[in-house]
Image: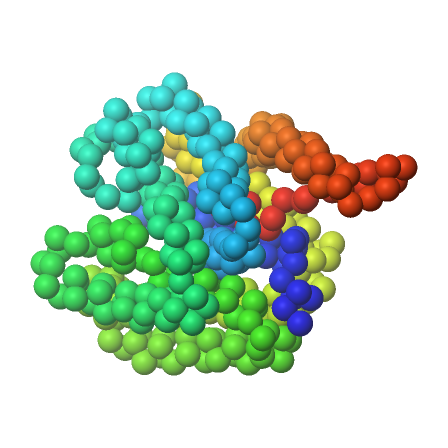
Length: 395
């Protein structure tokens, strides 16, 4: 039954979240930071991180799955919008504001970059900015998704919502192809960062949320769905590869480059939820899940740490150019993880726990007033029930 598969806490999804942030961290630490390498091993290691940016797409698929699930589960309840936006604000805003303060203190963004950040339009060039902060583009996509999607989920029935998700998934590659062919380079940035051009990853995740809350949800059907998505991913990749699928400069690549990866990410997420493999919730994967717990702060802060390191230390040391790159990656990754851990459990948790306690007191008061009308005077009031954090809290 769906209830046995979709749970309040799903550690298997923490694993994929941790893998996503690890791939982004390695991409920025190695491939993004060096254009050439002195030997074959160094070149191999650098090239192995070239697709680390796809961790953002994995985040998007996870977000579509988790956020749509939260909205579907709360649909019809009082305070639908207030509850959703309140929870999102408590989870996102504190660390986001702290990041903006740090960026301002170290003069890493211009006034235009700050304006893009506070208006969540960093994925567009609507406001001129001499310096902006790269991670904000995907957070802007998420915030724009949060702005529109709750109303759509509330107003649309299950079938209509499924049709909307399918339409988004099928039309986005076509939209990217048209923009690439007829845009003359004008829409290159939009194809990569614009919400109307990258929403198919969110739509795929949303389809999974709908499936796992339908009467067809089960281990067998989840395996079948995941296998089908993985097969389609392989077909798209094999057919598109000879035609420039991996290169955005080619229209086929602009349209389809992320499609097989999005499909594969959806396949492994749905398989994990449906089959719940023990390895993803066991001790061997605990370090990756720990990264998943702090993924939001780690995504926000890691480039700040890299920037400070580059200001303080020379680009090359007695380790050599490649050795210096590895030392930089190790030091900055460690510092970023420590910073994200402190932020998550000593700063962000303060705001989350404060609201949870308020909700518990409010719920207990409401329950006591309601129960007083239906029980004998000597019956004891039930203890307040603390609701745990949903798996969808955070990037």
